[in-house]
Length: 203
Image (cartoon, rainbow, N blue to C red):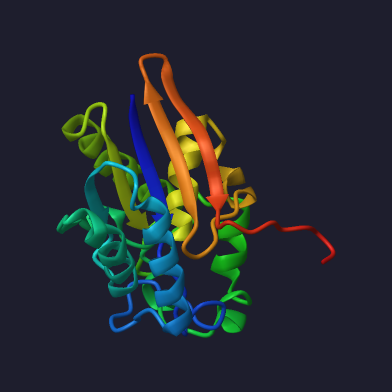
């Protein structure tokens, strides 16, 4: 069996404030470094064969924490990068959410193209293709992949057969761990959004 550990990058100052997208220079903050270090300690006993990452700084920095205890070099894959939001990149989230294209993307993500960017179907296609290459290269091994919330959500949706229109029902928090196991009879979702914390509606 092959296991993919899908990890969302840890916290940064843009989180919940601005749409970081592919903006350069978005680094982990102190909270994010603490999250990444804690996750690295949890994963240290595992025999990781490789660590892959989105090329964006916040993902690479998270991946470096994960890779360090194993003496591994982080391998960058462009296709694991964040959604290309195009003209929306860098804008405050409260502004972005008022845009008609953003509202349409919540209803029809597979067919709504962000201005100057891509559709969520295109995100899913490129990310799954990259993961299939990783799976072929690491048969019966454990591999860590550091990416972004939407990327992880659309990938999980693909492998569990969830319609892309419903991918936002999946929650993927900063520095969370999601695990897919690949067997001869197909993929299995073993863990989703594990941060070591419990969440209850209403507080």
